[in-house]
Length: 476
Image (cartoon, rainbow, N blue to C red; front, top):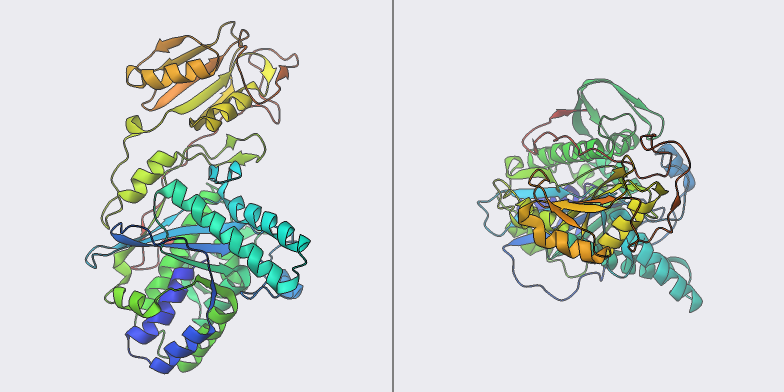
């Protein structure tokens, strides 16, 4: 999960002159995977995709003992390779510009090439499952089956992230739960600080308030906890960013990598649990990182909308607008991200169900999503007779296109509608297309509270704290 710091730690050995023999030992033991496509055109930065994988095998595809996962509170093995942590690290070619680590919420609802629109953490698993089925039919078994299936999963995930962010992934690094815990022990623990005590039976997190140093299973629990946090998964992302910042601060400070025993443990962990892309020129990358300090690394999260976006088949997801995400990522210059212009983005479709037909809003929003409209707010409304589409004058063209898509609904211009948004109100007269197979809503009145499974609105997240690798921030 904190893969970039692990790689950075190893490279620092060479950059600081610790030893050519140590670098050769690391280089010869690395596990690599052929996951990158053709070399992309230069974009002014090196983009690295870091992946924390809920995997029960080592880097070579060999199964790990269940007792290890029991100690880590990892839960039952569902057989699904979900990517619990996704971080895009952008390192500008200009050494004077700071680097940025951008977190992507695992429940982001995005387009997965070849598989439709789903949560981004399923991109790896969907492609890996498809490839595993194909290979098993050909008689491939054991570690070879896992390695080849996982390679297809990595390629699918890279393609999904590239499509979402507009970045061309130059390098890939992956670590599983056991590897993360083992690596934190190898470096002698990582300092963290909490604003208040926490106790969570799901992750095993049980920590007092204030500064403390964590390694092994407690460190994993710290970055995995989301239950009991004010903003759930987004607060977990802040936890992960703070932990990564602290680890980077420790690694980039004097003394961490001068202990031969610690170096040996670190190399053993990397060789067992880290997977990198083939052809990564580690020496060249190390040269690029010379002079990097903790203050030159900042941690951000992609723009998100509601955290409670209903989906047709994936439960509740995190709303994202790919255009705003691409503007955000392209604007990272090492200072402040360029503020995206919502009015320049494709339409965000807010759908309200005032028809009394259960599931109609979800079905219409899914149809809009399939036709390039970014999913927006969704909910029930008091019943009305007539359907209508509202938008500001600046979004009139988008509104008219959506109106035609939904069977020729009337459009009302309303400058109180937020920039970039088109509001769809579905009345009892709605006879246009949708994907829900909606039925008449049971009695309960036009203002009855939504039942479980009905369309329900969510709320946008609050802003998180600014984090850099210059120290140890106190967080939730």
